[in-house]
Amino acid sequence: MSESQFGREDARGNWVPDRPISYGPAFAWPPQPKALVKWFFGFPGYLLPWNIPYALLAIFIWVYLTPPLEHFQTMSLSWFAVILARNIVLAILVYGAWHMWLYVWRKQDTEYKYNRKWPDENAERFTFNNQTKDNMFWTLASGVPIWTCYEVLLLWAYANGHATMVNPSENPLGFIALFFLVPFVHEVGFYFAHRFLHWPPLYRIAHQLHHRNTNPGPWSGLSMHPIEHVIYFSSVLIFFIVPAHPIHMINLASRLGVAPAQGHTGFDRLVVGEDASMDASYYAHYLHHKYFEVNYADGMVPLDKWFGSFHDGTPEAHEAMKARRRRRGV
Image (cartoon, rainbow, N blue to C red; front, side, top):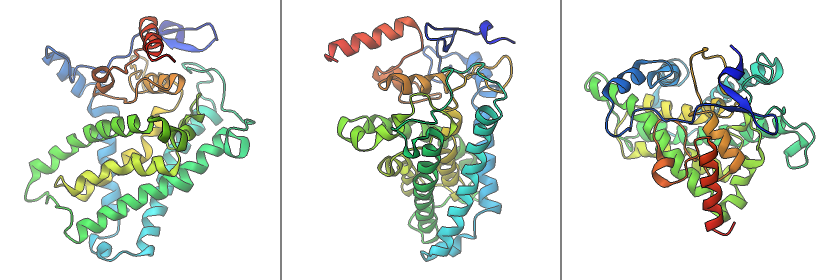
């Protein structure tokens, strides 16, 4: 089905979805029980296409790709290297798959692409003067090692009793329920970390590196300054307070590690089906990279609506954003 059935080209020739961004019925008021059930079990919805696969990925990583917990009772560079290698491979597979499909093989060409231009290959603002190489460098040289540091710290804490561990055989309901908590921790943690990173001094020192990508691609997702990586991954520290299993920590850590790829593709409808609209998580974040001061969160929790930073992609929302700027004298 043609992209013209779902959107239009703006004055610059870029593609804009017709439908305003919506975060779904999870926090709608008054409650919408039928819509909530449909969203929870539907596609796209709460369980699919992302939350179940991320939970299954965490279980697979814990069972097959993580050494037994007792190995982490003593800090060791060898076990850090094992986890680092695992995370580097995971990042290359996920970010690389999105990049190869959309930007190397160009399976969709520019259909449903918000900005019709391809990544910059000769721009001085990027390391190596190349957008993709810049993004890969900061992802693999800073993002993955810092992700690994947090993960090894928590594994050490679980192994030594400094973080309370939920035993699935003793508390199966609690163990399952925690999988439903992780997406909300991810959403809320990302929003407040992101707002903090837009504090002007911190933005200039760190976050502006990520915002070199006004036309993001998959590798842009985790392309950040090391200071930003430290802040971004810090939400996993919640498991020092909330009793859980290492699987839940890995669920959150790996989600923080690879989910930015899907949020920075630069495309809307992708390969998820003709009737699916992913604009809440894709277009919302594209607008953040375009305008900088809107849509700090993405996904199901309407934090931007609650805190006055929401842009739903409509002309009315754009005028409201410009009015906020005028009030601030910008």
